[in-house]
Length: 368
Image 1: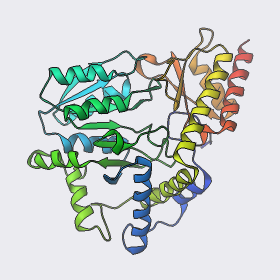
Image 2: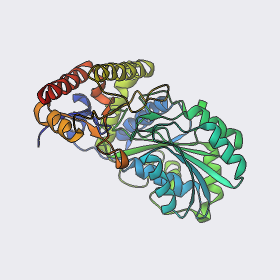
Image 3: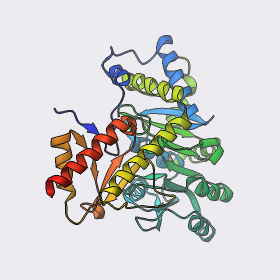
């Protein structure tokens, strides 16, 4: 299989020392030696999440930890307010409905950020909302929603908030405790720059109180956070999770977390912003218009409109076949209308961006 430079919105290219951990001998997922590694990984994650809350590493993609959030925090029939301005906001609603929850919609245009004021007005109008769930970074459009303002509203209302930070945590500021995030979910294979296969979730004390109050109406076993807390307590010394841990994924994640913390969160955030600026300036110079402008344009994704004299399919094929670079296209109603370039993992390096911009220029020159 050919190897391409991944400039898609995830998964991402990772450093060699991170990737090599996936090929190292498989360690047992319990015992003293392993627990030293596992505890360091959790400690590093808490530094990146900026939290003292409980934190779990769950086998499966980000959707697994999101499922666990809905199924553990809420009981069948509960109302959860889910504002949406894109594909992944809609997916949160599908997840909630899968647990028999009433997903209360609050819709915004694709090119507009979620309004904290609108969330507040809805919470004041519907007093029986049990939780709010929101996507921090809507990767389908490249919008970074105003999470601190939204979380301030939910905290004022005393309503717990579930945050899909799958493609944001580690790439932009997200201090979980400072902002009062109750359930924060992310994955290694986006901004944390490690291979896919596991998901990460932090759980606040307020969330635990609500979860435990509904213990007789909770859903499932594996994706039930009470199961994870039980094993984290009773088997804390040697096996603090209910099933086999994806040990090589943890090793790779730890290698990447060490790099991130050595670099410093603020430095990594700044490099990401610089990568987005470099990409957008280069595309603008070639006649492309950004799908989102202004303060809510995410530094993690550049979403650009397709020029009328070209097709995204043609350009993506050229970049892949002639330049060895993969980019993302639009999803659903934006298919064929925009393309998306990820600024995560190795793709925030100038070498990647220069290769991408050169490739786009070559494609346009070829078209004449």
